[in-house]
Length: 281
Image (cartoon, rainbow, N blue to C red; front, side, top):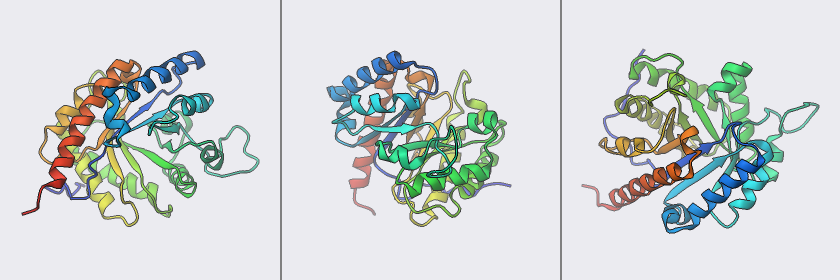
């Protein structure tokens, strides 16, 4: 099965470039607070101007116990703070679960759903991913919907697989924006990300699928999986690139590396803004 990939990117591709960071379970409280402080300083400096003016969207997803300190550190900035998971239910006798309505109450704006580690280590099925996606959207939280194939194959095979994942995850969910994070499982933690041609082909298929769905305006397609400095620039070099940004892991633990990615994102956002302002033939 192959996915139909449009030759060009539809005009609905947002000019805003999105960069996200998940800290997973690597940082303790003191480390997380120190990282928040350095990133907040970066965002408030001239290097973070594109984040402050909205040309670049930055979201940070710490551990649950660090959500409140993150909110404090990024107060007065547009940085979105997220959660790494959420329950399928808003309330109930569900010991150990974290309610999406409570996350919304404390200011969480985005939440990871369907990450490969949740699927592999905790047995999350496509049905659970769909229920969590619906839970996020009905509570006004933007799901960072993680999609990706387990084994390396052709780009068309990957595109077909993740488009099916996308449709399954959004079936029956409330309207609203989603951030689709294409994260091929075989590239997570690898020495190198997936190839540029592979990423672009899959992202084009995801963009086309999103554009065909009602009530998903403003949705973004980002890439994750050993993503780091330099990748966004290489992706942006592809004509009419459909990739709206990156979802970073370990490479963003160094705020300087995150700053480099944000600089690339600012350049891409400026190019997109210029292109969207040009008169159409």
